[in-house]
Structures are given as C-alpha cells and as structure tokens.
Amino acid sequence: MMLSSSAFQLITAFIVFMVGLFFVLSMRKYFESNLRRVSLLYIWHTMLCMVYFWFIFYKGGDAAMYFTKASLYGFDNEFSLGTAGIIYFTSLLVQVLGLSFLGCFLVFNIFGSIGLMAFDSTLKYATQKSSRHLKFLANIIVFLPSVSFWSSALGKDSISFMSACLALWSALNFKKRIILFVIAVLAMLLVRPHIAAAMVAAYALAFIFDQRVSIIQRLFIGSIAIVSSAVVVPLAMQYAGLGDAQNAADIEAYIEQRQGHNLEGGSSVDISSMSLPMQLFTYLFRPLPFEANSIFALAASVDNIILLFLFILGAIAIFKKSKPLVESNRAFLWIYTMIVLFILATTTANLGIAMRQKWMFAPILIFLLISVIRPRKIRAKV
Image (cartoon, rainbow, N blue to C red; front, side, top):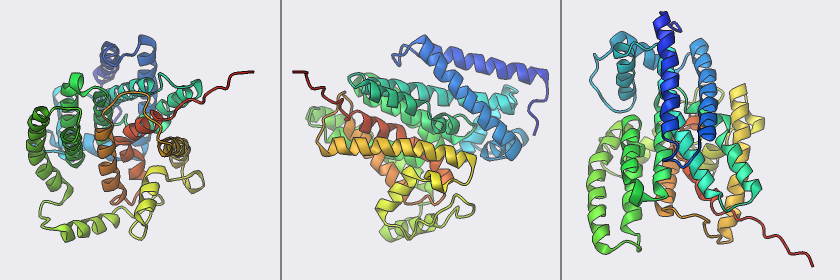
C-alpha cells in the first residue's frame, strides 16, 4: 500500500484538508463557536489524524483493510450497513474521486472534526455558569488525545463519534435541532445500526414520558418514533447477530459468546466472571496507568484517570441532588448512555476496542456529569 501513486493524489489530499477547514469554519456559527477556536480544533484533530495515519501505514489495521478492499473490489459488493457501508463509501472516494489512502483518511478526519466541534460547544454551554477550574477541566477533556485520535481515522469510529456529538448538541434543544438529530441517527445507522436503534429508542422513551409535552404531541411524535424503531431495531438485531433470537435465553447465550471474543492480545480481559458493576468500570476506566502495556495504552490510561476524576465529582454532585446549570433533554441523554454502556460493557472483552468504542457515548456522559458540578460558594469576608 502506497502513500500516494501520483502528485495528483498528494494535491487532492491537500485539497481535502482545505475543504474540511472551509467546511468546519462555515459551521462555526451554528455551533456558536468562533473562528480561532474552530481552527484550533480542526488543526489539533488533523495532527492526531496524521499520527493515526502513520501508525496504520506502518503497522496495519482496520483502516488499511477498508482502503485495500475499496481499491481492489470497488463496487463489486452490494451496499450494506456496518463494515460493508464503510467499504462502499471508501470506494466512492477511491474509484470516483481518485483519492489516496491519505486523502481518504483526511475525509474521515472531517467527520471527526465536526464531532469534536459539537462536543466542544456542548461543554462550553454546560460550563458557562461554572468556575474557572471547571472550564479548564472541560478544555482538557476536549483536547484529550483519545478523543481526536480514535475519531480521526478511516473507519466507523469517526462517523459514530460525530453522530453521538451531534445527538448531544441536538438534545440541548430538540425543537430547533430535530433535523440534526435525524442526521445523527442516519449517520450512526450507516456504521453501527444497533447503536442507532438505541438512539431512536432513547428518544422515543424520553419523549413519551416527558410531562412538559402535551398528550397529543407525545402521541404523534411517539408514534413516529415507535414506527422508526420498528424499522431500525430489526436491522440492528440482524447486524448484531441476534436476528434469530427467539427469547431471553438466546440473548443471554449471545452475550456469553461475545464475552469470549477478542481475547487474544495483551489488552484483553476476561469479563465473563466479572460482576456487572465491575464490567461497567472496566469498560469506562481501564486500562489504568499500572495496566498499560504500550504507549497508546499509557496515553489512554491518563485520559481514563481524568474521566474517573470527573465521574467522582459528578457522582458527588448527583448524590447531593445538584440541579443542572443548563437546559437539555437529560432523559434522552441518560437513557441512551445507559443502554449503550450496558450493551458494550457486557459484550466487549478487549480494552483496545473499548478505548475507541466508548466515545459513542462518553461525550454524553461527560456532559451529564459536568453540567451538575456547581462552583464553590465563596464566603464573604467579615
């Protein structure tokens, strides 16, 4: 696999980078950001994209597989969801636009950058009434290497990260951003149908039980959501391998089977013998620094310590019944987060996979926690 086969492909890669910059800058007003901030986010995300590209170019990985199949087979395979969908889309980039491996990486980098911009704007909104220290922590989280690293490569993670962050931004005001939410669901459906099903189900449940909405609206929107779920859920179950499940026993057997997958390598753990709380903790916060066996695992462990610190602060605030400082549809956000966390934590035995897949819901969990942490009250001097 070559970096590029011609000067034309190097030029097109640069054009893709500039198109991405122009695109994210044109969206800054929608996300209530500014020129300097958006430019910084895009440059930072692209830098991590180049690190990921270098790693895949020399070490190999899923991104190389997607590009190779798109280059060799093109449109021979029918369009489908998941892996096949990524290969088909990459075929458009390679066969139609003539992009190189680097050019394809930079296209997916745009998706991740859009997600990062939405995530940054959401945390800015969540901390607008908070202390300087909390705003500083929000800034640290936005620029965590794991956030931009995993969402910058050719593959599913850049699109799923973008989808989760767009859904989060939509949840701050569903009335004005419902079209954006539909786009988020469709993007997730392309790469991970089972997560899209969770997104639709969470929206339906949150809307139906929202007492602030009139009964007529709940019945109307709820019916649409239920119909959408009836379409998306079967697709998701088929994609996840549960198409033939007849009862709870079949689902339990599937979970046990998944817990035994991907146990090869130093980043694998046996979750089948763990309690549910330990599975959730393992998925969210491991590897810890003393468990790191590579430079990437060490970087991820530092990120996990920061996330664990935020989780403790947020849990204390929730225990004290601290009310959120900003408005959002928290019912949808909590339902979606809990569904996805439960699904992934009970079926993923490989921490390397967990490190990248958890960003399909981690931005939402971070928002939920950071938005209830109140600034300390300063005592007046006597």
